[in-house]
Picture 1: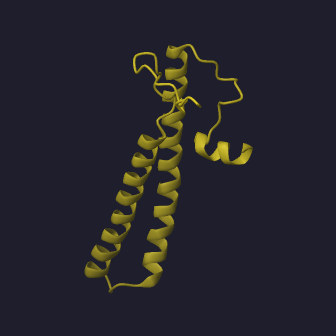
Picture 2: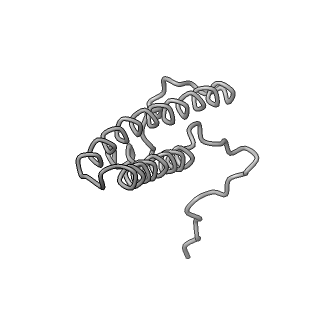
Length: 115
């Protein structure tokens, strides 16, 4: 007779560490900032169209360019802040930041490349 072996041993929540970088929070912050910037571009185009000579695609393109620049700046700030928080969290947890498992992308993406 064969004995049933569980797939994974139960882990104790008290000994389990929080992830160094909270990717879900970073994605939420990026999504929120991009939605705000996109809304401001459309609102600015609408207001300028009502006040000015009407809605022109040239004005929309200019505002879209400013929106792209603002989105890039927001991404740098959000991702940089997330990296800085991860750095501080790793230091508090006593983790090394030079290990092979430390990267700038979520672990799901690196697992696909290795496996």
